[in-house]
Structure formats: C-alpha cells, structure tokens
Length: 460
Image (cartoon, rainbow, N blue to C red):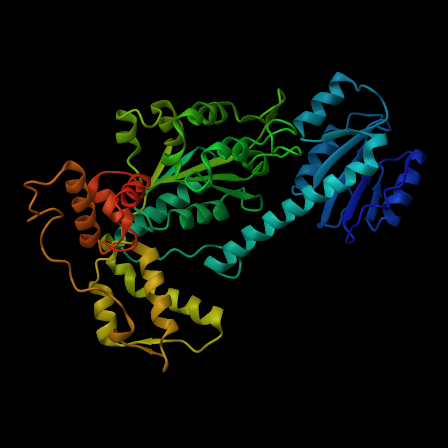
C-alpha cells in the first residue's frame, strides 16, 4: 500500500481496528505521517484507557471474522465525535456488513484510495473540531464556566418559561421558539441544547434570512461535486453536520416557499439527499426553529405551508418582550455589565440612581439586543466607572399618539402615504425596524425592502 506521509498532520489521534498482520505497513505509514496510532484487535472490546481525543477510527472490513455490531455500538458510545472510516480491498462486501456500516454511520472507501483520502478526511476532522470549539466558545461567552447559558428569570413570565424549557430539553420532538426580535430566541435554543442529552454533540445554526436564496438548499442538505457550476467538491449540508446533535433553524419564516416541501420531508423522514445525488443519508437530529413572525397568519395568507408549521410546532415556547418582564431588568443590567467588564479586563461599573431609573422606565422596543447595545455604548465612554444618565442615549418617552395619527393624507399618492406611514412608524418605534414591522403587520424583510424603495435609509 502506498504511503500517506504526504498528508500534513498535527499529531491527530487515530484508532486502528485491524488484527491482521497485513495492516502493519499501513500502521507504519500512518505513524510516519504524524498520526498517533492506537491499534486494537477489533473482535475484542475497546481498551478502558482509550484516548478521548481520537479523531479518526479506521476499521479493516476484510479482517473482520465475527459480526462487529457490538464494537460499532461501543465506538459510537465512547467516541461520538470521531470520524468513522471503514476500508476494504474487495469490490463488494456482504449485505449484512453493508447494513451494519450504514446503520452505525461508517464511511466506506477502497483500500487503494486510503492515502489520498486522508487529506479529505483531515478537512472533515478540522471542520468538525472547529464546530465543536465554536459551540463551546458560544456557551462560555453566554454562560457560566461549565458552558450553561444563563437566562435571568425573576419575573413570573420567565420563571414559567424556564420551567417549560427544562421540560422540553429532554425531548427529541421538534420545537418552535417564537417572540419579538431581540428577545433571546437564539440564546434559549442554545440553553435547551446545552441541557439536553445531545449537549456534547454539535449545535448547528442556520439563519434562513441571511443565506442567499439560491444557496439555502445546498447549505441545508449539501451537494455533490459537479451538481452546479461552483460545486467543486462534495459537501455535507448543515443537517448532516448536526448528526446526533441539534439543528437550529433561525428565522424560519424567511424560508422560501419552494424549499418548504423538502424541509417537511426531512422532518418526516430524517433523511437527507444532497443536490446532485440519489443517495439518501439518514441523520439523527433534534430540530429547533425560531421566528419573530406570525406563522399561523402566514399560513392563512399562503406564505408558509400549514403542514410544515404543524411539523415544527410540536412543542412551542414564546419569549416575552422585555417590556413584559421588567422585574428581570436590574439583574439583566448587572449581568450584561459584568460580561463587559470581564471581557475588557476592567473594574466593575456602578450605575447611578438616576440612570437606573431611566433604564427601568425605558420601553425597550428592541428588547435584549437594544439593552446590550445601550450598555456597551455607555460603558465605552464612561471615564470614572460610574454610569450616569448622561452616558445613555435613551430617547424621551414617545408622544401618546399612534403611527399615522394627524398625517395630512389629502392630495397624497398611495406611494407617498406608504412612505409617510413607514417613516412615522419608525419614529414612533425609535428607529427599531423589527418593532416597526410588527406595528405595520409586515415582515422585517418587507420593511427593509420598502425603506430601500422609499429612500428611508439612513434617516426617517
């Protein structure tokens, strides 16, 4: 067998399951290439002292004498994050072995292709490792040292919500999280994943609004090389990457209508077929979706599939706006400032009584996101560690009139009326586009399009 020494490695740990002497040359080549190889007789049990950092498990199909089912199950239990590769020098393998390999998610390659395949495998390992590290960093950034996301729950609304979140965390049913923009839907999804039995598996996030329309299907379900012009290599989709973990579909209301049937099929069957491929890949994922839109209304207006809505809405959690949980504000302010000072390595801030009163009295139409931005900005320009009212750019209370009240509409065109209605609503909502969209009964995407059409950037 040809050498694999051309593959550049950084001492990746590899478990080699092959009792035959024929595998000696491959083991030597792997060691020369920089892999730390642990070789095990694959008809026996895995050693108790197995390195938990093993990145690849290499299984020799031809040397297998007994059924490896128990071994496969143990590999998945002990090394859930490892890339599993089975190789053979034969043109075909038994139907029983093929079934077991597919059941336990082994990738099968020809022995002669092993050397060149290792560079591709290494990319997969690096992507998987980076994803795991990103998830860990997100949990640490938002939570305590063991990675649990902290959600303040002093108010009765939040206490009830967190009690429900605890209950649904252990389940595998699809979950729909709803609430206004900036209320913490993504944070709650991360927290539920961190509390679930899947906590040590990937949390893969997909923003249905930020991905280009023509790339959403490829991002979700993957593609084969040559499936379209820019498909220069095989690529798994986010649903495959989330195998054994959680797939979080943010802003699900923005998913194009033409892609909704494919997502519905995936939710029903948990099977992925990449673009350009006929091979169905079974994946084990828990799906959490989030939206700030009224999906039931969208179903009535035929903008969202009703059957998909019911598939996603098996379980539902609705996050309250910040204005409905004011009891949480003091602790949220303290926790946010603590995070700012820890990140910047500076002494803690003190909030003056006048400033705290203003913060507690503010309507916060932008919810938690607006609160965090306001505190970040105030802290950046604070010189003596005391946050005073003058450090904050909180606007005066909005006049007690509804959007459009008092507008002189006589003699205006419909386009002019629409422009003034949007401009006045944005002023009423203190520039918060998500809040203005809700007030007008349209989506955020629609208000951005209308603002652009009416030239309402950057002032209104």
